[in-house]
Image 1: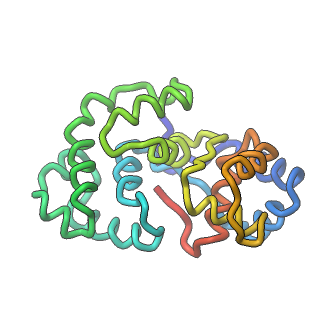
Image 2 (image 1 turned 180 degrees about the vertical axis):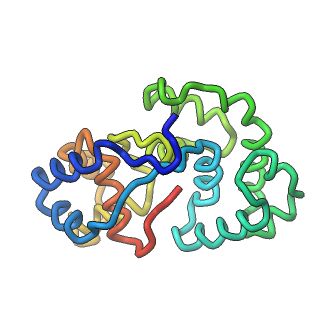
Length: 208
């Protein structure tokens, strides 16, 4: 399993190749030289943080996350289940998200023993979406922020899409097909490109 604080070994190579293949992303990489990706090394932690971040802004998610962390302490299944439903609601979570968070905590014993590092991206997604509240986007956040997989392209992520439209289409809407076609030149380092697209639209670095 990827350990806490681990950084992608491919990061510098990916930045070099992306910069050579794409003039616009080269400028962004130059502008945000401090951007890095660091794994929490804790799949459960990132799952819960991803649930918190579903369909809300990075800033709003950070506020809710701070409250949740203060309420439960270390983000573990035991600590989450030790809190009453309304205590978790009071952190700013919707009723549905509290159900998801508690459900994942209750089910985690069945999932924590998998050899995630030995599984391919698709198998990991298929396994994780068995958990209620975990869709493809949430599983992709695990692949990026915990397992540091190099070529993840979360097409359902609004922040990433806005970044692409801002940089490559003057902020005008693009079709899914156009976005996928654009991403072809980023392969096999689309995770890195995605991190830079997020950075162009949000002053806070995206973290899960």
